[in-house]
Image (tube, rainbow, N blue to C red):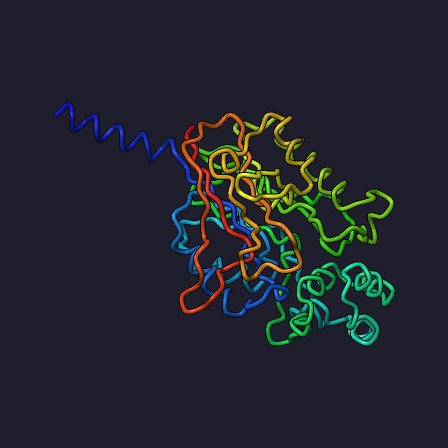
Length: 352
């Protein structure tokens, strides 16, 4: 009897005090190949995956957010920043993101579409008046590329999840808020973090920080603030640790676009100063310490335009007991020669 009770208590103890934390950039945008084929598999995975908390990056389109909400069990909380929904008919009906931007978009397609450099394309689009359009339209054009017809789709008339981050939790959420790194500033890629208090886990900060998208810095309305993408990324990282400073058992997670150098696994450093900054603030990266394999890899057939493999996806922990870490979602979709995303996911299991 005593032995059976001990087993029972031990099992309950494990359920209450351990949590599987995952981070996954799912690349649900038209700029990444095979978006239409990948999207249902991503959502099905969210439904069946074994996690307690998951931070998703690059879920930009409102319809994808809606499908996630509709597909997941009611026991899973889905939290995002408020979606940006354009309206028409004096606010009586929803509208597509760029329904007022026909002249601007015509200029972009006529003058800019042939440009291959991201900096040149952005600067040309700015010259056509892109930054005068709504943030929903700017974000839609940025992440859709040649699929920009979606930004005018009067059948979908969808909203935009401007920062692209989504937090899923099977544990009770006591409070949640979304914070933009640059308040009230229109951006081609507007960044934010979700700050969520989760029962039995702690304070979770889910984010997607500024990425390395070229040597030239071209965020139009921040040229007077930052001189490089790396500088912006480090500033984003500082704001995350500032938010976590007074938090109990904080976790900072997401595609944080900073990678250490790990020669043993052919991982090249990128924006490494931000990674070292998190460590200097008392955070640890269990995935890097225990696994260290790339999450953004040259061997992934969906990855384009990069010349090295990196660990860009992180779950930084402080004041947690780490029980394990692993890489996830590396397999190709059944019947296809590509996985669900150009990133792989990671998991860290913690005990409180």
